[in-house]
Amino acid sequence: MSELKYSKLDSNRFGLVIYRSKIKVIDAPSILSQILLHNIDTAIIRIPTDQLSQIHKLEKIAMPFMVTDTLAYYEMDLTSYKEVPPINSDLEFVVAKPSDHPAINRIVRETFGSYVNHYRMNPFFDNEHVTEGYQDWVRSYAENDPTRICWLVKREGKLVAFANFNYENEMKAKGILYGVKPSERGKGMFNDIMRYAKLYSIERGCEKIQVTTQIENLVVQAAWTKQGFSLDRTSNTIHINSMLTKSVFDNFSIKTTLESTDFNPKKVSNRHILRQINYQFDFKQNIVTQNHRFVNIKTLEPGQEYQLSFSFPIGNKGLLRVLDAAEKETYMLVYFDLKHFLA
Image 1 (cartoon, rainbow, N blue to C red):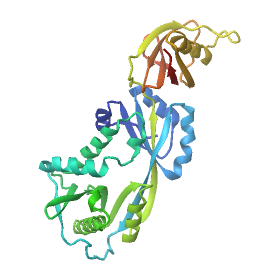
Image 2: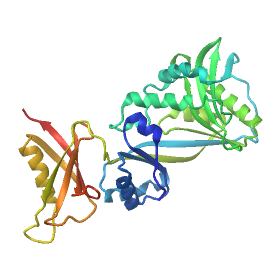
Image 3: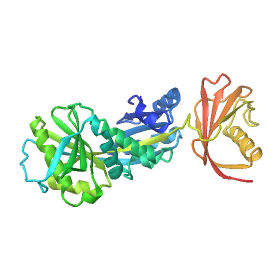
Image 4: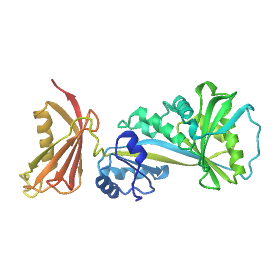
C-alpha cells in the first residue's frame, strides 16, 4: 500500500484534511491506520480499473466511500506523425504568463464552471471551490516554467480557448487540461489545439503524447481516435469520506463508563454504543438517527471510561468517535444518518 500524502492545495481549498495516493493494491488496514493517524477527512485514492474489484476490501473498514470517476488515458506515437493542415488557419497560440492569470480565470470559469469530475461527485465538497480548483490548476501552468505550458488560443485578438501541457518527461508530452469557449465549439478548434501540441512536442524531442479525460466525455475521445490516439488504460478515483475533523454544527463530547453485556461480562457490544447515540439524540434532542455503521478498531472494555465525541460532517450525517479517556486512541467510529428534526 502506498503512503497517503497530504494535499495542501485540496485541504486549503475545501477546508478539510485531504490526503491522496495512487495505488495498485488496496490494503484496507493500512488505509484505516493512516486515516486515524492523520485525522483525515477525505482520502482520495486512484486505482487502475482492472484492479477495481479490490474495492470490496474497503468494506472491512466500514468507512463511507464512493467511486467518483473513471479516467481514460490515450496515447499517440509521434515518431511517425504526419502533419495535417489546420482547420482554422487564423488561430494564434500565446504562451501564458502570470500577467494572464485574470484572463485564465475567466475562460476557465466559462469552460469548466459545471464540468463534472471526482470533486463535484463528492457531497462534502463545495462546487464553487471545485471551479476555483480548476482556475488554480490552469494558472499553475502559466508561471514561466518551461516544463509546464499554458497556451492561450486567440482569434482576431480575442481569447477563445486554452490548453495546458506538461513536459517534465522529456520523451512524453502530457495533455493536462483544455477548454474551448462554448460559442466557438463545433468549429474544429479542439483538433487544431491537438495538432499544434503534437508539432510543438515533436520540436521538443518528445516521442509520445498522452491525453486524459473523463470516460463519459465521448466527443473528445472520438476526436482523439480520429487523430490517431489509442486508448492506453483507465483508472478509477475513490473517495473515502472518513470526515474526522469536519462538522457543520457544534460538536460535543461526553465521558462515560460502559457496562458489560448480560451474556458476556468481559465484552462491550455495539448495542451499548447505539444506546448512547439514541440517548443523546432521540431522547435528549428529539432527533431521529438511523443507518448506523460501526467501524470497530479496538476492543471496548467494560468498566473503562471513554470519551464519546460527536460531530456532523454535513447537515444530515453524524459521526461518533469513541476514544480513550485521554483522547489519544480511537476505539470505534460510528457513522449515522439524521433522519429529520422534530419540533
